[in-house]
Image (tube, rainbow, N blue to C red; front, side, top):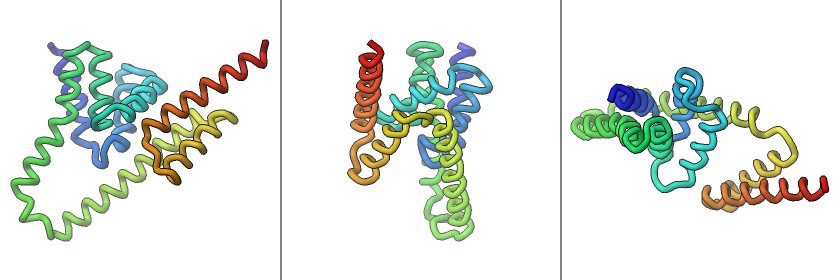
Length: 181
């Protein structure tokens, strides 16, 4: 039971400081589950994050659920998921209770503007780190540029982009294997 409470508290802390959604959560997740607790490697976290992106629901909750399940099975998934959603639920209830008082407060608006800028910096940092680790050769560069074009120009769903990237990488692997014969 202690391990389950630890999972709940870990994801409660991450959920409490995750402004901006699932992308902003990635640096906190990396620090906690890869560096501090060594639950996963960076590659495994990236894999779970990719799966969380493709499955229905909120990315942050999906990833927490996957990590919880991996650590402690079904109950780990339940406690990790609760830990991730409870801070948002509590904060939303508190904000809803006093929303009319703070809606037009300029200091609150300034604070949220600063938080949004900070989230952009956190996302930029994680994108740069992912870029350095994963975009290293011709194949990965083609996949990256192709995914960027499909997303930015054609507004294709992330699910289709991930599927196409996987198929392309599989095809490139098969071509290399065939050339070696």
